[in-house]
Image 1 (spheres, helix red, strand yellow):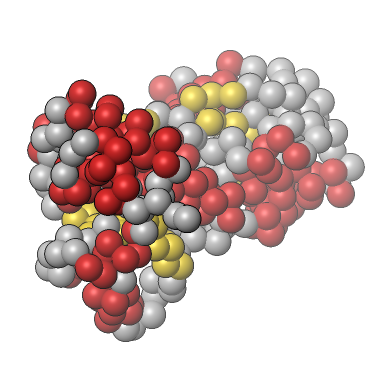
Image 2 (tube, rainbow, N blue to C red):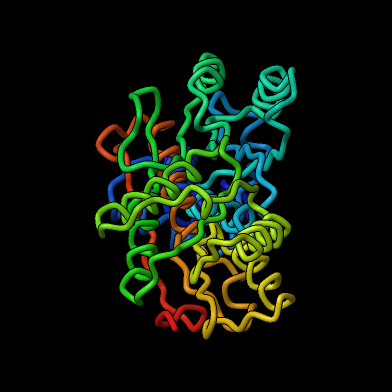
Length: 338
């Protein structure tokens, strides 16, 4: 027979309310009491019914991950990171993919928040980069944490987890420069994403700092897709001013660039170096494996969820912006210029 909260309280010798406070990870419970309750939980294999708790209680114990992103690897890492934090702290996760361009997107999110009794939301681009959207959702009296590109939060609307794409892109470009490359192509992701702008600026700043003129002909627009990598590489390698290296805005683009280069009979890295960004599975599934920047998306997401839950509990000491800088990972797709 399944154990109940009454069984846990009886075995631990505490009140039902105390068990509830421990299961909700409330900070006011003394550690010895918490240890007794958790020992009883483990002994009885007690599993709280979070859905029932949401319906019966005055508090909401669900958080939502709202996103509009075609990158499946990114989305899965984000889901896993947020879910890890939720499991540890007794919250449920509502996953809500949507189209950020829909004219009724505010109404859609509002209905989801009310229907699912959401305590807070983790927002990723493009939602996190729209102050107007954030302000309207915040008016629903829910907590919000944003994951954004940049070295510091652009405002004080909500807590943020920042990803320093600029400095990581600078490191990748400088790595190529140190290998002797001066003609370095750049294939962008969608310009509606601040991460694209930050990565492009990091690329340009690295060239300028090393005395290399920026050649706009070597910069190609695109989207965060394999097809953009194919098209961008073909365009770069068909023009008169060919690059000796290509920095792609993410690994999926880089994989496409590598594929196109192979079709054109270009050896990687002997004739052309290619680098990506994010260290997604794409970077390890190509041959040769891609030089990239490791962006710890799962850790970023878990950190964002922990900040969000702390915010819902008014644990102000735990609420401060965090920053990650993706780190250069050198693999076989880049080499000295021939």
